[in-house]
Image (tube, rainbow, N blue to C red):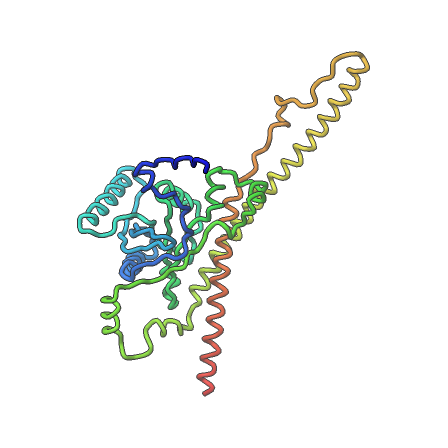
Length: 341
């Protein structure tokens, strides 16, 4: 019988160590009801001013649990005040840790006005968080839309393909086509699940009115939504103007590019004719490219990030207008039927 090679001896640490597994994709954001109430109160108290706050919780598998939050003070354009804001954040997390409350940062929340949150500042904040946190989300709350009887709360994260492209800072048309990235691939919306402890659920059941109709149901029947529609249309027109300006930048770039290519062709034809004359006279031909010539200096292509964000914002406004208009028609038909009866 052939001798078998002895099995390699492993240390205890090697045996106990588990191979690193790939992180599971984020499927759902589970938020405590108390944390949602804190977010809504903070955003509504300072509306129409925009406010932000910290989200605290745990990252468990494919679920990001948000168990608590606290607001940030309103920031001013002052370095001293910004330093005080950072110290306030650290002090708040220290106090929460002392009272045995979750103090793990899982993202932040912010208010918005009519869904106008697709900005470069939001992307930069995501990237700053991403440097220290493996997974983070941003909870967006819109008080103006919530007045229509809808809980306007959504959880967003940046797509992996967009973050990879943003780190390279290369938003040219060729790179976007290579990555197959469009304006709808910037943000990913994660489903939100509201969670309450059994004790809170029991208390809410006791406090619930016997009436089957709530105030939120009455809010959905409001027929006067003209101001909301008007502001959406105003913002939509502004975004269309911004998109037109971005298109003018690209038109100017392609116009300069075609002019440069024409100059390069003319210079190349002239150089080739000169080289033919030099060959005929027995001289060495000159190179057909001259890096020192300004016409061979590449023209930088404008970034398409701003146009992508503006297009994303336009799509958001169109969806909001479409949704409100459809609800208005339903209310009008309902009111008409009630009057006929």
